[in-house]
Image (cartoon, rainbow, N blue to C red; front, side, top):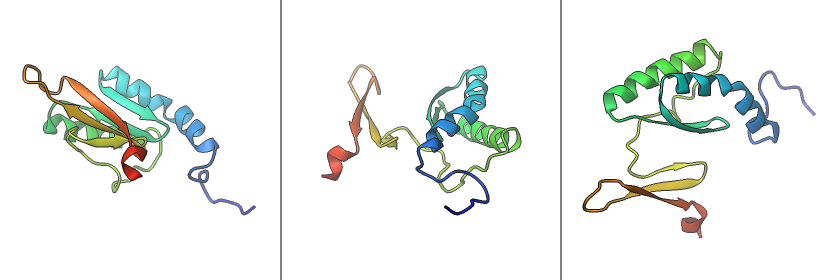
Length: 116
């Protein structure tokens, strides 16, 4: 074993558990703001209606995470995307459209379905 200057090994068995404990405060903050979100360990998606509000929330949540929680946000992996087709935790989300309702249902597939 070698000493680590900081953090836990990525992909280690403790990583998701520690993330859930540490980021519980983030969950509370997002809920207090009334935001729709999904988070598991350090993967998080926040769903907003407009690009303007997405930019505002991204700035304020990044400030919260870095200031209050003293964590570093990876800018390469952080971004604003349209929820047309995206992946979260290895599952893909694709909206399906009906003539009478736009994006009324979402089809979810596992990434492995398309990798084979």
